[in-house]
Length: 254
Image (cartoon, rainbow, N blue to C red; front, top):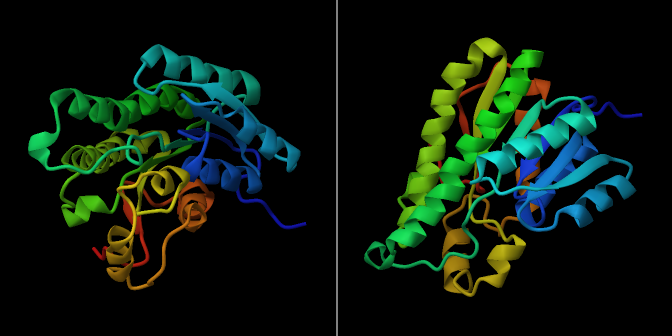
């Protein structure tokens, strides 16, 4: 029987009901982790799918911008599985955004993106860190974006929010290192997730130009992200913290 790298570990994945988040949750479960799949959408079908495949999972409704909602989700995870070892802060606003000049982004939309993409990460790490400190071990994997390195236009709020996530990762790695908690960033390129496929903004020449910028010239699927995720979640990366890995087929090289 093959050794599972995350046997005995407990993972939380935010924004896990569909798309890349669901792929992360399935991959963690396949490597032996018990998973809390949380989302503002219904993550129960995913949890049922993982359980049917022989894994362990629960679904939790969670609004990452609401501190009490996040704390309740973490408490539910601890009650179900005994603790938390891994946090994947995947919940974010992106696929549904309409690219537009920054002069056309209104303050409400800016604030909404920052609340989910930046403060959501803060709320989740803040709620989980005490549980990881109890074990003197933890893996926080923040999800950013390759756009941070490109200065991608027409998405100023999104790119700015993901730049903040990169900065947060570095600060958190310093603050939590003595507690045995590693904090790293996974930065996907444009991935053909369910949400992206539904957005008419991500069609035709936009996709073709993005693929053409890559050293590996093909579209990315959610599953292309999971190998790096598992590395960052497992003991293989126990001496790695404060780092960022771009997974985009070589569009960004830094």
